[in-house]
Amino acid sequence: MWTRHAAVTVPRESLEHVCSVHQALGDLAECKLVSFPIGIYKVLRNVSDQIHLITLANNELKSLTSKFMTTFSQLRELHLEGNFLHRLPTEVGSLQHLKVIDLSRNQFQDFPEQLTTLPSLETINLEENEIVADVPVEKLATMPALRSVNLRSNPLNAEFSVDTTSLLVCGAEDRTRAACMPGERATA
Image (cartoon, rainbow, N blue to C red; front, side, top):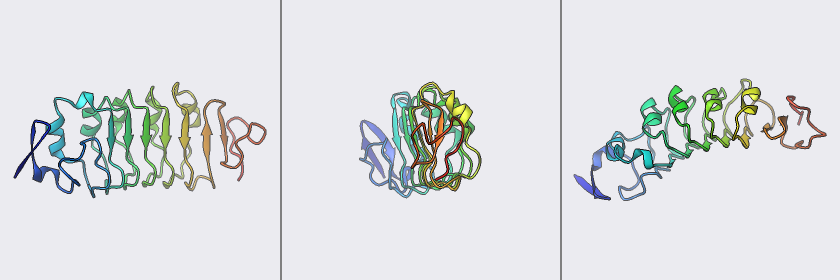
């Protein structure tokens, strides 16, 4: 069965588990997706450079492909919270215009260092993951646009955040200059 959407013909079976064919293609949240639907690559091949926001929140994604990253290289925001992701493909480096990435409530055990190469990235949300490895604070501090890194509720420490404007690494309760030393973790 074929369905028309925005003058593009899309086979309904290629959009398995997608909430609605008439839903905005950028918002595929809460659709029980286990992978990014291949049919959407075909539908969007001529307009992928015009897509600046994709929401794949609260699905069942375990990984993203390199094709996803290179196809949507003009993204400004990528919302992947509430999935089962544990790593990002190396090609995330092709998202040179990305400003916001939400990876909260996933299964990352290591901080995805590829994010430190993105010059436009302003916000990284990794809250409620399983990050136990060191956070590359020095690399984060050199990112020109970075304003916010959320690492709350990770087993690194009770609560942890990075204030890149002053290069302070502090616990959530102690965010004053007096409570934290540059490059040191405050105890909660």
